[in-house]
Image (spheres, helix red, strand yellow):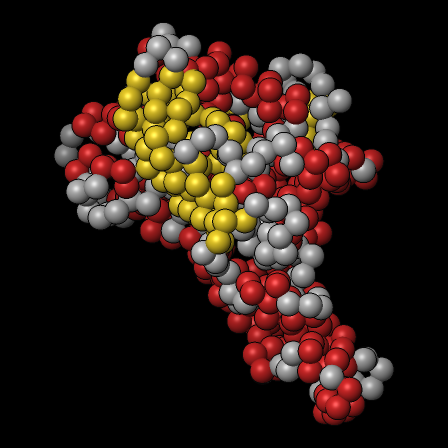
Length: 483
Ligand code: SF4
Ligand code: FE
């Protein structure tokens, strides 16, 4: 059976024992730790829903390697239809979780590595692609969750990897032997890594020959000896250690992915798991492929999340008694318009995708970058309108503990009442959900996840064919160019 379910996913994580630190302490029971549970629940849903007949078409696929039914998050896209289904699957999961479900980074890493290793081998006669296909088979057969590990800490951004004062600021090879390689360095912002099975490391930027020790791609279990994960803080994260559910907002699924700084302290990688080692000429293509796949996603997962934000704005307006005000309706229409614009961008870049030499399909890179750049703007605006509609209580609400205090309960219920037929607690719960979903961590994720806006602008300019556009203008203006 190649499909795990939510329970078997959780059980399989027990077989791994990664070294995880959080708030200054080593966390041994990561599966029972309240700060991690929402992220685990969210990722588990990618397994759970894949077993339900109504979601089968979007969340499962047929493996091109075996012909078997697999979880779509391990699939190599075989058509533009697969790319469109990816976006629909992400929107569905965004709606169901209201959060990041983390599995897409590894999925994009699988597809990027699949396409690039094929092209390296074709040119150089290496055997990376064959090794990668064997690895992919293992991933598909075991329905593994892969953490895509791309972003290095990068140190001084004006310097190349080999020019850094500290050579470890980019992940690199420190030793090669008959059995494999030893790597040192780190990867930052590692979404879902503490509840993944494996990590798939990729180069973080286009490199020159002098940086060839940094031109690396490999896959290993997340608990490989020498790896340390330092789990990052999120806005109001210690509320997860408190009793109750209300103050946590999206208490079941969290909001962002549960990111960690992952450090590689001289970690051994066997040769069969090395998919690039020194081929610096391919690093630019690697980054471009991964980034295009990952930027495609944001008009999927973020529109699903946005659907929940719109829903909470509608609920807040109703609970406040202002749902029929024309300016509220106008703001809701704006929110829907922006959400569907983002979705349209994702669908368009998928529909306009093309086949790569390997047979796998890639999105249209220009449109994928436009998708993500729009997300960095529209999600802020969608959240701003939600705050506008909901009102100031989103920021000043008393706690659940106050509501449960017999001396205060009556007073809070009396003075925070909105329309008569809605219990005050429900109104408070919607405000808390809005606070959680539109707070600092969620916004920053929309800005910088899948690369910062400037990275999209660089790619947009690269793909935009400005020369052709200039010629269109010159032709129409009757400007004759000298031959
Ligand atoms: Fe997937 Fe979106 Fe989370 Fe990225 S931010 S891992 S695309 S759900
Ligand atoms: Fe992300």
